[in-house]
Every structure is written in C-alpha cells, then in structure tokens.
Amino acid sequence: MSELEKKYQALVAQGWSGMLFLLLTMFITDLVELSLPGDFKALSMRLSLDPGMVGLWVLAGIICLNVVGQMAIRAVYKRSCRWWVFGVTVAYVAFFLLHQIVHLLNGEGFDIHFILDTTHHVVGFWAIWAAYRWARLATRDHDDSPAPLLFN
Image (cartoon, rainbow, N blue to C red; front, side, top):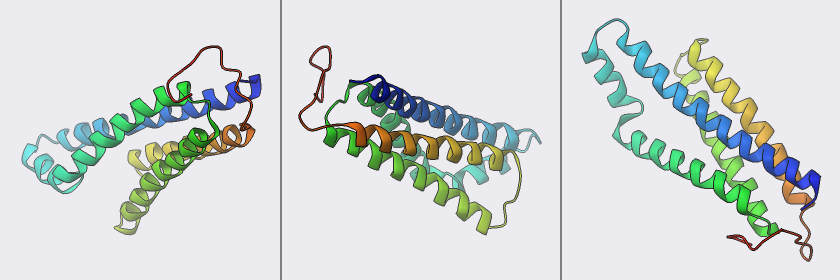
C-alpha cells in the first residue's frame, strides 16, 4: 500500500475513533446535564424518551460497529472492502446528522450538544472524504500488503 493510501486509511480510522469519542461524550453529557438539578425522576423520564430502550440498543450496535469497523479499516486492502467502508462511513454520519436535524426541528437550539454534534459531523465529513480518496486509490490487481490479513 502506498504512503498516500496509508494516510487516507489512517484518517478514516482516526475519524471513526473521533466520532466514537464524541458519541460517548454526548451520552455522558446528557447524563450529567440531566442529573445536575438532582431530579432523577426527570432524568429517568427524559432518557426513556431519548434515547429510550430501542435507542440504547441502536447506540450499542453503533458503538460495536465502530470499534470492529476501526479494526477492519486497518486490515482492509481490497477495493470492494474500501468502498464498503466508504458507504458505512456515509451512513454513520448521515444517521447522526439526521438525528441532530430532528432535534433542531423540535426546537432544541444552541447548547453543549449542538457543539458536540457539529464537531461529530465535521469529523464525519472529513472521514467520508478520506474514505472516498482511499477507495479511489485502490487498484484491482495491485496489493502490496506486507502479510496476509483478514479481508485481504
């Protein structure tokens, strides 16, 4: 793999890592912000609505996909797998962008979540750009990976 391919591969993995960190920070911030007034019944009621039990399952799935995805990004050299990483990255960013749009349409304005969400989207779009560039650099017949890897 060329140095340029390694650069884009590293940027994609770093983007996924950054999005995971921001996702976890957003969730922790919700818990802290809602518990500061000391009304844990209100905290419970809010969390039952967003994310709710279904949302917790979705978040758990996304977190697991992110961690496994980061490992796969480092192990992937085939063109088709790179395009899969690009597609998943687009879907990942789109999901959270749409989620933020829904919150904005429901009247939630500028707050700490807005800053974290916006940073998540910036990192996500950067990861999309890097994933696209990485996928485009792949050639069908050229694979100079140093050793056989999973997905190779």
